[in-house]
Image (cartoon, rainbow, N blue to C red):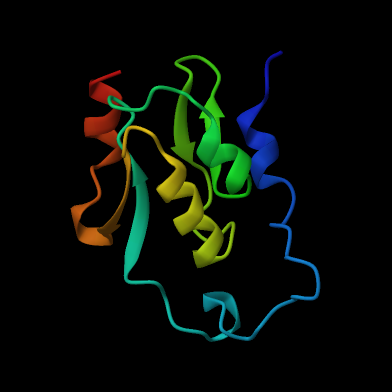
Length: 110
């Protein structure tokens, strides 16, 4: 089954039951997160645990079978942390935005 990754951006993230916009989202004037979620795709084994726990944040890329962050604010911080904690190879990390690998360096290793 082939999944088109662009559909991940077509719908807004699902809010947990009873939770709507809090007013703290950056688009509504809230503060920005200081760190970003990053998956070390070279270490990832494609177990899909993170994508099952935080499906609005992670997607398993179909060609290489590795997890990838598709939306930084897709799920609550608690849900994202739960997904990070379920990773059996510890390949998901919080990094300051300045330390994120550039897209060019990530693509050159592919």
